[in-house]
Length: 397
Image (tube, rainbow, N blue to C red; front, side, top):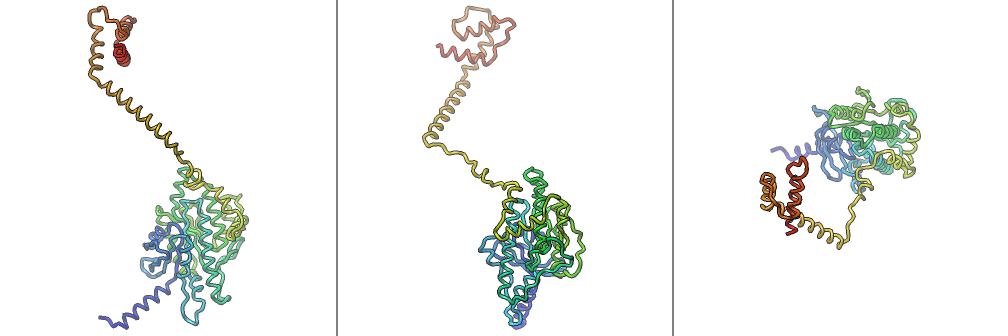
């Protein structure tokens, strides 16, 4: 049996190793599927869940992954627990230092493109609040802005939170399906991507698209995350791509306004960057403008209010009684048509034309048959005519 002191030391060492592991925070929609494809980890529906895992098969690069399952205020209030301060007198700013060494993956569900900007606004506001709170508790000099290896261009890092951000667009295959179903136009998705890239440029964030139908997209995200956490000083050897949504790969520092406008030259990056800054302060109409440019969600007001009107109780009962009467009449007619007399009458009437003519009994029934025989080129009476004459004869009797 191992010594208790040694066992306790091993537990403490393991705890320190996990606590020292770089942190990744993953808020957003579709994060469970993303985590499973990224590193095989499972995310539960707790307020703030944590898993200690590895990004590579060799398990050389361990990370601590925190996930938030919703954007409710009660859930967002637990985010600071992912960065607790170290209780050592020589490190009063440890929580902020951990934030600067972490990577925040903001997961955006592109199968609902009409809500992407609203999702992004919530998550960016929560991270800004997190950083501001930590900064308020620490010395003002410890907060450092993000640095980039590339020279700053127009619109780059104009909003510098001092933490590393990655916008991860999930379910891009579902977005493509919306285009095939004519629910979303291709240019609407391109507009969405242009806005996201403009915002990402302002925050110094990367933008990557992922899809379960494209496993390579998960490999690219894993490689980029590994680069940010462990090899940021080295150049990333993956090729940036903006050709399609599923293979979208815009590393931080690569993009520019001129590249964004390639999709649509009429798109004004400077105007949208300013409008986003206004939206983050609760001003402007960017989100409303985005809603006007995108298709309405399936649960739009027009769809929700297309209800069947409820009739008055008495009117409903009268309608029900009329339907019952109609059903009874139809059943009675069916019963009458099933009577053996009908079949016998039809057979007898069809045989009459083969018999020697004789004076018929005066009735509407026989008048119909006589008229049919006297008609030139007359053929056997139609079954409907025979039925009609049969019922007329029964009425006359």
